[in-house]
Image (cartoon, rainbow, N blue to C red; front, side, top):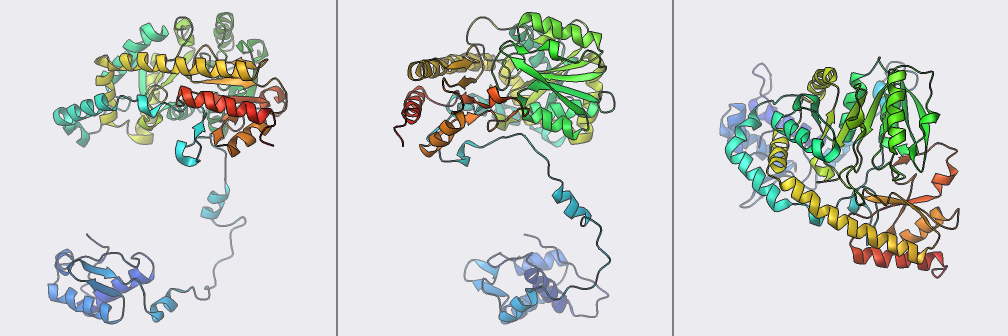
Length: 496
C-alpha cells in the first residue's frame, strides 16, 4: 500500500523526523485510524527513495510513543489505543477569528441547505417485509443469469480490449441496431440505429432531454397523477410545470392548454404511471394533433410497454407519429432489472447528435461491457425468450392478485389489469387506503398509496389519494394469496 507522504530535501528536520511527523499527523487528523495497517518499511522506503533504516527508525519512534503497534507475523498497524497526549491533541481548540460570515452561511453550507425532492426508489431489503408489493420490482429469480454470465465472459475474452477505450457517446452501434430491430415488430416503431441514443436508464434519458431542450421549451406538461421523477427533474430545470388530469382513458387531451407554444409534454400511454390505464387510440391521435398545432414535443415514456397481458401489443405513440413530435423513452429496468442501468431514447434524427454531445459532456458515454453484452443478448434471441417467460409468469401473478381482490373485496375498482407489472386498486370503502396500508405494514405486508409509491399528485386529487398500488411481478402466487387474505382480515377488523 502507499500513503500520502513525501520527503522535502530542504527541510531542516532529519529524514526520520519528517517520516515520524507526517505519519503522526495523519493519525491525529484521522486519516489513519486505529487498527489500520501501515506500509512495510521496505515498501515505504522505496516510495520515498530513502534507506530502509530511515523508515525503521521512524517506526521505532512512533511505537515508543504509542502510535504504532506490531502484530507478530502479520505486520505493523496504527495503535487501537492512542496515548492520552495524542487524544488531547485531537480535541478542537478555540477557533481563530475569521472574516465576517456570508449571509445564509458559507457556500458549502448553503449547498447542503438547498434540499430538493427526488423520486422514490427503494431497495427490497430496506424493510423487513415478508410480502412486498412495491411497484416496479422485477422477479430476481427470473433473471437469466447463466446466459448473461456466458455472454459477459465471451465479450471479455474476445473484446476486452474495448475496456481501455472510450466508446461512441450515443452508444454502441450493435446495441442501437438491436434496439431498433426489436422496436419495429414489438412496438410498431420504425427507426434506425442513428435515431437511438443509449442512456443509463429512463431517468438519465430525461436528464439528457432536459439538457438538450433547455432554453427552447419553457413549459413542462405532465400527467396528474404522474411520475415523480419527471416532475421533480424538470422543475429543477427551471421549466414551468403544469399538471394535466388523467381519467380512465388516460391523459385528458382536452385539458391541455391550446394557447401554448413550444411546450414539452411527458406521458406514459401504454400503462400510465401510477393508475395503470391505457391511453386510448382516439386520444393518442388527438395528442399528436395538439403537438403539431402548438409546435410542441412529446416524451413518450413506454413504462411497462413490454408487458401486455390481454390482447396484442399496442402501437406506441411514436409509431403513430408522422411529424417528428415524439421522443420515445425506453428502459431495460423492468424487463431485465434496474441494476443494469440501461435504457435508450429514440428521437427525431436532428436531435440525436445533440443528445450525443450532452452525453459526452455528462459521462463520456455509457459503459462498454453492459452494452456489448446486451447487444449479444438481444441478437441471439435470448432477450425474446426471456420476455416470453416472464410475461407468462407475470400474467399468472396478476390473475391470482385480481382474483383474490375480487373475492375478498367485492366492489373494488381495479385499473391497470391489461398489462404492466402493477395494478391500482380503490377499495369499496372510501377513505380507508392509508389505514389499510399502515395496518398491513404491522403484519409485514407492503402495500402503497400513490403518494408513497413514487407518484406525484396535485393537492386536489382526493380520489387518487384513496387508491393503492400493488406491484405483483416479484411476489409469488402463494404469497399473493396469503397476503390478500390477511388484508381482508385486517379490513374486517380482526386485527383490532
